[in-house]
Structure formats: C-alpha cells, structure tokens
Image (cartoon, rainbow, N blue to C red; front, side, top):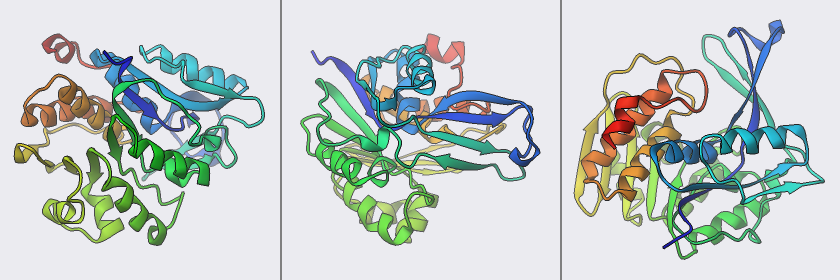
Length: 295
C-alpha cells in the first residue's frame, strides 16, 4: 500500500483580494487567503476522500504558516512542505474589474528553490503542472525528474503567460506533457501554445500520454485513452469566478481514476467539482453535500 493516493507538487502563495471586490488602485480592506494550482488539487482530493499530500517550500514567515495551516485544514498532509529560512513565501494580488487580473510577486520565493533533491514517499499518482518548470532552473529539473519517477504522473499544462513567453513555453510544455501518464489541457491554451483548434489536433500533438483530457470551457471535455474517445458536455453553471475551476476539474477526474470509475463518470465528476469552484470567489469551494454523499 502506498503512503498516499496523490502527492501534488508545486508552489502556493498568499492571495490578497479586495473585499468587497473593487480595483486594487482604490485601496481599502482586503482578504488574505491562500492559492496555488497543485495545492488546490490536493484540497479537493482530500475533501473527496483521497489520501492527498502537498509537497513544496514556504518561507519561515507568517505567510508560510498560513499556507501550511489553511491547506492542512482541508485534510491535506503537509509534512512534505519544507520551511526555507532564507527565502520568502510568494504573494499575489487579485485585481477585480471587468476582467479580473492578477499580479504575482514570486521571484526568489522559497518554492522557486525547489529542486531535484526533493524526495517523495510512494504514491499512486504524482500531480504537477506547467507552472513549476517556469519558476526556476531547479524547478524545471525537478519537473523532469518527477516525470521520470516510478509513480504515474498527472500533468496539467496550466500555461501562465506572465511566467514565460509562448515561444519558449510551447515546445517545453509539449515535451513535458508528452511524458506524463495523464494530461489535462484547455483547448484555449492549446490554441495559444501549439495552434491546435480541435481536441483531435491536441491528441495528434500529444500521442504519448495514456490519457489526454482536453477541456473546452462551456462546451465540454473530451478524453483520449484506453476506452477510446469519450466526451462529456459541460453542465450549465452560473459562474461567479473561473479561477481555480481547472484545478477542481483535475481533482474530480483524478478521484474518479482512483476509484476506477468508467471514463465518462470521471469526466462528469470533474464537471461537478469544477462547478462548485465556479460558484465562489475563492480558490477552494465547499463541495455539495449530495456530491459527497453519492461517493
């Protein structure tokens, strides 16, 4: 038996959001929270009932304590999070408006000092994203090592234009995704990165992964894998904010994978968890009682 079902590896940061929502330039009261792609996946997995861990680095500061405490409160094991006495915990700010923007202050953060020396306990799945290799050379080396590891790897492309230009990110993210066992990618980012206009175009570019999950917003999700091609339409949702929905989807799908559910059920479970995320302004939403009861 493995120590964990899923170990999620990557940076999380303190999140500052104006409350009530308004432009940052106006000043005033704010809410201090935590956010991060991989830890968000871990939080949802833990709420669903999986043995989930988050591996990372935080600064020896109050924000690092906040991250470890808040993420652990969802049932995530944080024993794999190192405290760095020489580098700070990263911070980012959400700027609400007609189109919400975010501003990152993560250069030189503790998590950017992650590297190939990170040792993980046995798990069924190791989950990482395309954010990590963009943080530093040592983080890029870590991503390569994880993809060569013994555990099944789950990779969410998660392209962040603010971290690296498409000319560099496109080939590198395709190379990394091609080596993972399960890959999640949005059709919108695949279009930017690789000029792919249809899910089948993405599959042609990424023939390697055992399972490729292509998300197309309100249209639905198409997966390519051992069961062939499977499509699940997206249910109608009143969207409050889209931030974090992709990570919620990955968590729902991975939980279905851990439970050996049929492929279409995995896709639908991803939609249900993502739907919960779309209805709130925070990164991690409470899951509906009926969803948890059905599991």
